Length: 201
Ligand code: GRF
Image (tube, rainbow, N blue to C red; front, side, top):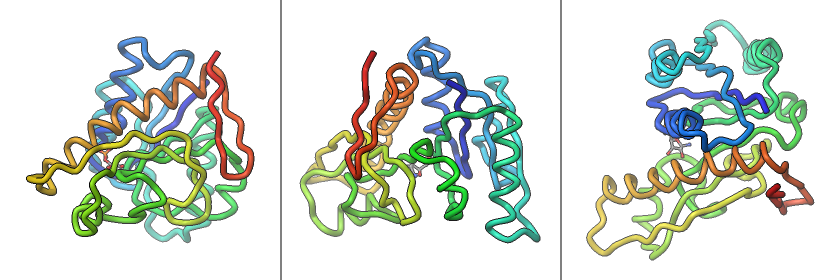
């Protein structure tokens, strides 16, 4: 299964996928390209170091729809079958999401539907929850609102700072995302309404 990644930033989740592949832990999934809207995104450098196609796609002067058409063309060029968002900081257009039903994944640093959007770790601290975590979900038109594929819980400790909590959630993301990609590539997944089941082969 050919996997593409959209990333805008540091790319640690991308790195987790790269490392999983290098270690033989991604099953039949194969990373084929990393696309970014940010010229100097560290994610692109990580991709180049891993010998993946790494492409900066300049959004300047394009509408959201027009930019997503550029992405669609590059994904088609690389024959991508599963698309992973990994710190991709743009919303995708409705037509784009509809064009890839059930095949766009995102990772988010909370147990959705709690704390969608930015600063999810700070939101968890501010709210005072005892448990937060990481979620891999399918992307729909809403903000972090698509069906949940997998979650890992992370306890909030009494002396947690934003940095310590974020670090433990990130470690959970790095375990969860490759394991979901592997499971989908190996056995597929079934989406029934909001419920997603992984079919382990
Ligand atoms: C992660 O916390 C992810 O959950 C969120 O954006 C962050 C990206 O980090 N969507 P990285 O670029 O993968 O290091």
